[in-house]
Length: 536
Image (cartoon, rainbow, N blue to C red; front, side, top):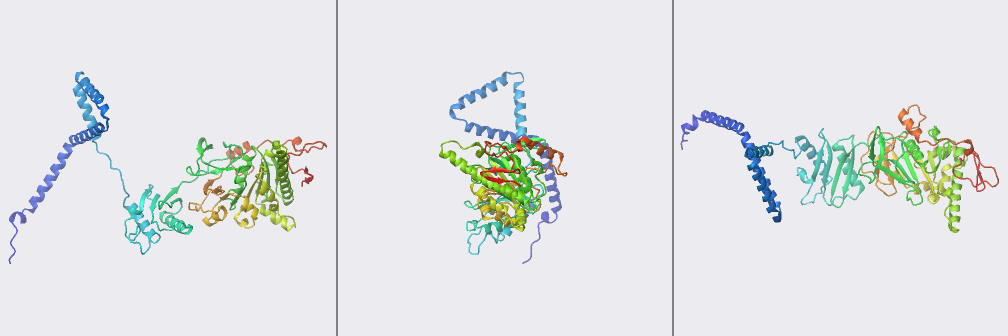
């Protein structure tokens, strides 16, 4: 059958049709430009009428009469005014033009690069969140990532700052190894060099990953607004604690969330253990604690490193001793053990006789030990007792006697800590660059954040008893006698130091009826306590 030829208008008039379409499109564009103000005002009037209808529908029936009366009064007022109708018309047209103006559309979804990143992250999670016999898998190769990622945020560089993942109910989110595998994968795929926080909601089968900002390092030594028995270890994230304290941050004053450690007779974590790498800020933390403890109590310092980091405290009011050698450390800790027993006996006698406890048993006594393991090696070489063995009495009975022990050491000395230290030092701090396994070995729980490759001094984690693991930044408290210390920080630390003791305060009374020695007397001199002479 022969093919019939096309009509002439379709075979020879295609160029004319194309020109006609271009002319019609140009005319429509020109007409739109000319009529754009009218279109804008019309769109605005339509929106105003719709808003008026909604307002009228939401008005209670008992208030519609007064509303109509008010509108009628306004119309009558404009009608009686000179040029009132013109003013009303101009006002309505202006309101319609403003309401109907074109607005920049708000982006509601990710762009191509962000979509590709989310798709890649979804495909990487498929082996972790899927099983072979799942009839309707939430995670599958080539599946819909929008069902699994219910929320996401990106920064200006296109990197993820927040991601909410919905995972299947059969995923073993109660196992630490399963959670750690997911956290490591998200950390690697979302970009290294940042610290991520992972919040697991086992009941709702949701995981929220968010990027944490750096903790401020500009907060230095100062008087913190705390009650007696409260010590600020450092500062943490805003949503980690329910309390803030005013602090000086540079030249300004602001509220910062502190990590507060409570000591005393009612404390459930009466002693503190600090572990860190060399140069991580453990000595800075111990110095900060000493300055705070001197406000309401007395301190004993045993320095095992022998570098003189606490020379600024020697001879100050409330500082009973600063020992750097094995002999002085043994004498000091032996006196502290007998002082703890004396306080317990004095408080017990007072209770049995129906009297309040003596005042010298109420004043807090702090025993601060910086790397006592070094002194333990020196004492073992001389055939003497390890100074840490003398801590058993203060650790076991210190809470009832208002005696607090703070011990710092490095990771290489963690295995040499005795069972008494591990049992009674339930408040713990880890400082410096360390892995999640090292943090768990000290705190007893893994942090919910990824470790940072580079951390400033004083940066780490804290856990008080069985509480959550908190990020921590220790306030800058350098040695004021160090030449590398800045002038502002040096003056801040020197301003917190007590006055130096006078010779009369150091002397021990020699009279027969002299009162029992009190804690304000330094133990570097020979002091008799319950028949025991302690001295160098």
